[in-house]
Length: 97
Image (tube, rainbow, N blue to C red; front, side, top):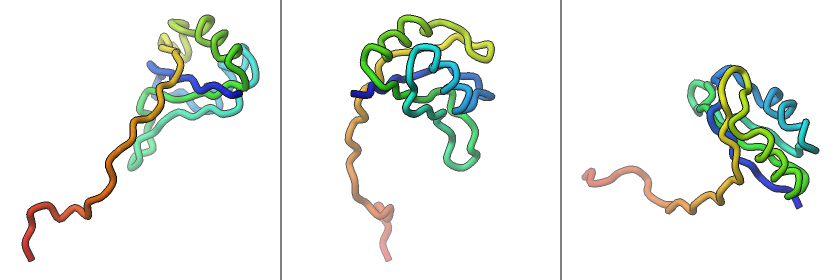
């Protein structure tokens, strides 16, 4: 079963491909993504890596946490489940027609 890892402290120049390559030293990377701003497509300084097994994820955390990538130390840990967001609203709060 794949395990998702949170990676913080990324340099703005780090790409998803560089993230994948860096984590591949710890096992099989099934996905790697640097999170970017919706409008500008600039990195937000964090991303997610999915390893093919829990053991590989734990190895990546142990080996790569606080280690530099592109000149910045990484914060690496198991990703937390995303909290549910309330849906709804059309955006016309309090406006009268």
